[in-house]
Length: 237
Image (cartoon, rainbow, N blue to C red; front, side):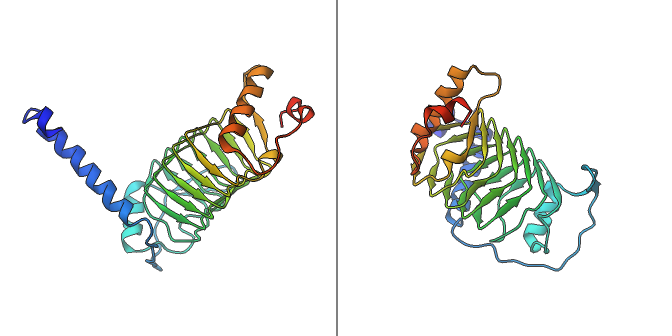
């Protein structure tokens, strides 16, 4: 970049180099658990969400908490508004949490439990998800890029138009989940489980297109269970 851009693009090149170095530094720390704790109580603005208001977490509040230590239940019952999440304590519970336009960036996610959570327009980029479970949750237009996902997975969750690209998936389950218009490309998958219990659909597509999509997903994930029979396929399984 420096040899081609010269002084004319010096500012842009400097910014890209800074981002690359920050990514590399974060990547080196991904095996180290986040261990900071705090009893600090934050004053949250509230977001009306159905019959249960959610506390609003923006980037500034998240950065403050990450620096000093997350208080108990920080991630529960919270509305994360376009937050870049780069650290989480092991075994964090995200019960009833909503993530709107968020990015999980080069984040260690060990034993994280998204229960009754909602993720809209979000992405997981270069994360390590070990034993991370999405149960009874909704993931819409939420994508996984360059991630390692070991154990855990999706249980009774609905994935709508989610894309997984350049990821490693080992012993991941899709038990009783719904995959609507999802795709998996350049995935290294081993011992995938529960896919035979999942409903694989493609809203707005013909039955032939839905069948092609199901076949592509089975080919990409190569699950340990046998492919469902033709009768199950006709019913969207």
